Length: 170
Image (cartoon, rainbow, N blue to C red; front, top):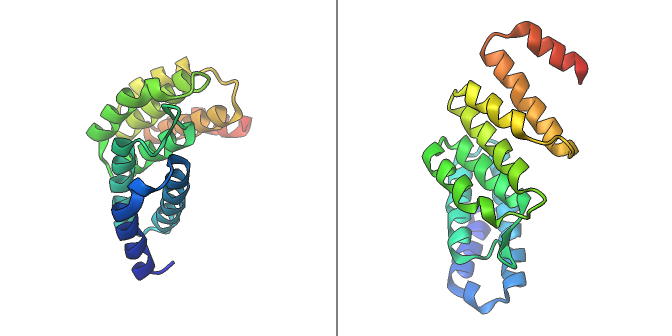
């Protein structure tokens, strides 16, 4: 949890990552991304920038892939980090480029959910609503996340009655 340790593990992973088995490297990088996520959620923007840089590195080295599949949580976290940093163009390219690397069971719903978030963050509310309408809400996480976006859209567009109605239905 100290800056010196963080810098040291980054340097060691850059130097020796190729010596680890893929599963070991994935585990070590996951620990590092968890640390950076924790710092980021505490509002330390420097770490958020480092996190996106690390995600980009992991995508290029394929350490985040298991049997050529990108985990749905990783996909979401990468997109969410890019949205937070307002890296919208990169985020859009990422969503399309890695859509087909997702597990088939999550692919379409997750892609449309993340596209809805992207469109929300870029104030394209109608496009966001269109993406939300495509999502099959058979997964509780997709349901909750889509309702979060919808609530935010109602708020941003001054649709107060719709927002309160949606909140009541929660």
